[in-house]
Length: 587
Image (cartoon, helix red, strand yellow):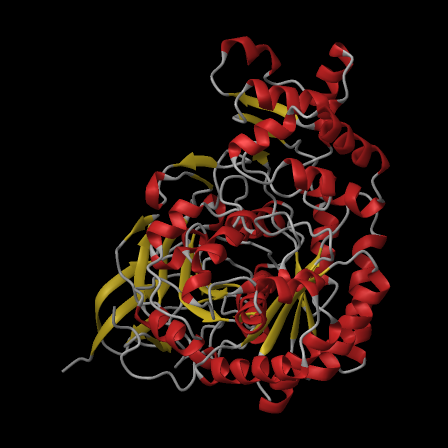
């Protein structure tokens, strides 16, 4: 009697993630794993996917997400899950919800409303809080229905607050006893299956500040407290560190990353390597430094900022000018607070002064995340007819006509529109040659950074996988298909400790994408579209995926031609996918 096989993917072009040349090959799946690639059929399949004219490749691994809350109400971690991502990393930048004492839960949610711009009411309604400690959190995460696989870092800010208290953690180094306790708790978390820890260190004028405008706990964390945690990874011989460090002193920042890698003796995921539009020295210096680290035996990976997406935002929700103290003060507090502050002549003058006198770091941040303020376009005006004449014009143009500073125009329009006037960053263009050089020029750079689940009202980075393939592989032809799938799947899986993921080989879990490269798209709108699909009736900005015939997680189809099947085969991959206990896939 012929063997009955779960699934047959027929007639596709296989790109297996190993950099091996593409080839025509059928693929059979049994019990969630790849049973056979190529050769005669091992049996009769219950289901067949016709992949003729399509690419069959490993599912994508998204290293930098903030789906920690969203995974509780959205099993597929969209928008990443729509765009072929089958595995995500949670707990990035040092932010998350574990460990958290019950009395700090509300404040923990408030922190994420600003630093990662996730709506409070959505988190409150969508994330039932059933844990305090890391083992309790991991057991809860294992039970949550998932349409993607995930691993979890220890969010260092949460750990420090749990041990030291919020104000103490922000104002001083840890004591010897506190460091010992943090090491103990990190060991406990990793015993429960966590895969390391994460940190954002952006200095006292952090680009992503806390709810009250003060820096996040890790932003001013001292070297010794970070190295203390790194010793845990060295002692265990396992785990990984994600770090975003940009304190303003580039030389000191890079020297510390090297010291951290030497102390931990474990992989460091460095955020982020990005190209300038016109000056190749910017990314080449980063690549040269990365190679020097590797020559010294330091296992540092560069997460590359490859995502192309626009910013369209209002001053009610915008938080990415926080590196400016005056802007930070202006945009913290309730909506009423913001409206009052925007009418304060003294504060307005300080905002303008800082913009005029800003140091190079602040200018780069403001231009990079939203666009230079004079170049911002008025996009929407709260359906107010008296403001319609401003739509489609830049703040610089309006300022010249009205004899105002562009920031005055921005604030005046925001006040007139009840903070609902929307500003659109200009499409400055992206340098495909330099972006490809970041990938082709180093063996240790990984595409991204998606920030999936964060900045929900003005950022759509979760579509980076689709964009990377149709932009740099298909349209620009600067990166080969084989190299692209290695970078989108195998390399990030290895860097972040996913076991046996990121490649298609017999016996490996069947995390697979089947797509038509010619039709691949993330939609016509550069800034995405608005949908009201979050808990508590909140809205977000999204980019939909076009061209994916099927997405499979652990051998089960989660999406067919963009339609969700409702299957939730994703797993919490404790320790990256080894030693997982039985029953973890149960809801």
